[in-house]
Image 1 (cartoon, one colour):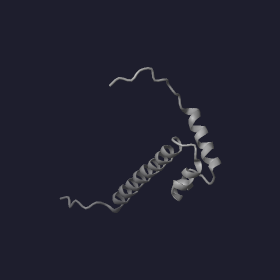
Image 2: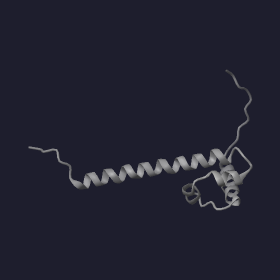
Image 3: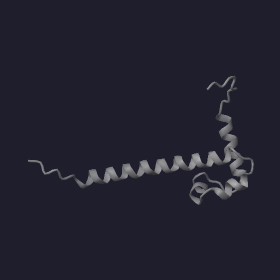
Image 4: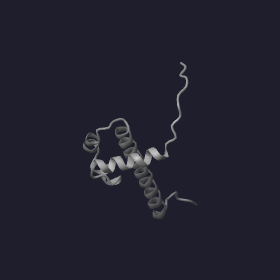
Length: 88
């Protein structure tokens, strides 16, 4: 006869896995927010002021020079393609 009681270990592992998943989603959201702000402007001071302390810590940003460095590294990895035609 099975009582359906879960061992504490399984509950603990499931909680850790869910927390890790949520942390990963939070990090991804923070990075996307940073890129959406930084890639669309040249005023990095505004970007610096708009970011949360958590995002600044995550990306190790303390000055506008840090933002420029990150964007420089990101742009090295982007392969731009010309748009020849747009159809609706």
